[in-house]
Amino acid sequence: MQPVQAPFPATRLRRARQSAAIRALVRETTLAPSDFIWPVFLRDGTGVEEEIPSMPGVMRRSVDRVVESAREALGLGIPAICLFPYTDPAKKTQDCAEAWNPDNLSNTATRAIKDAVPEMAVMTDVALDPYNIDGHDGFVEDGEIVNDRTVEALVKQALSQAAAGADIIGPSDMMDGRIGALRAALEAEGRQKVMLLSYAAKYASAFYGPFRDAVGASGALKGDKTTYQMDPANSDEALRLVARDLSEGADMVMIKPGMPYLDICRRVKDAFGAPTFAYQVSGEYAMLAGAAQNGWVDGDRVMLESLMAFKRAGCDGVLTYFAPAAARLLNG
Ligand code: PBG
Image (cartoon, rainbow, N blue to C red):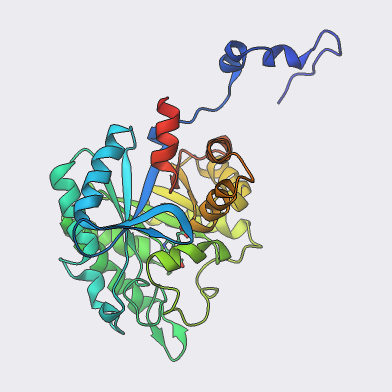
């Protein structure tokens, strides 16, 4: 608790804001490139970089380009990169088999990055939506997203990612029991070092719109994700999800989206003290980048301010499309 302060003029709180030097001395929170996990979008081909219209400045990259990007990011001090494949509609099926194809785009990129830039931590996404003809993170049977059969498929997907060399596996599907199933399967295969960063508190959010364009899932999605992603009205439920996922073997947890859910970040960090991350999602990026592009806000400043907010709210780090731009600024 705060000690009682002597009244004015003994206490002049402006004294601590008088110069850059004093402000630096009393700063409570720091932001560094090592706080970032950089999500990147993959596509087929070579030498390809194409901008995503709803995410100005964000590219889909072919594997050769993503390897170069990983090398650059490591040079900037960014410790981890997270891969999201754009999947050709022709490869989307009812059984989602492309998800555990050892040579799918995500696995090919993981191997290429770990070969060329082994110091970069590679995170991969576990969920069926890029490969699902129905666009959902799980299998659809009679109009319902089925849990347990989906978890079996997620296990196959995660094992193929681990075999390709993924350091961190990020289940973003919100099925029940998947962390326990993934941890057991990884142990059984002798992959004790693979980390699980659970998308533990993932909300059914409208802020994912540009991402679904980026991975080619918007057209495919039938209905919404409200029967498995969280209701934005809930907060206690987030704590129950985090507790559950940590008890099942998650090493780190995530809150998603980020900026509208900073209260959840704080509660999770205070309650568990576990490594906690927020995902500043595509719609958040689009709002900031779009406004900056129009000259309505100062892009660099809103970027750094928004990222600092995650640290202040208790997060250890943040998944952000701004990672390289922010790292460049922070490195001076
Ligand atoms: C899907 C997934 C989504 C995101 C990451 N993984 C979208 C969704 O749940 O529909 C969103 C990321 C973003 O918006 O930046 N498994």
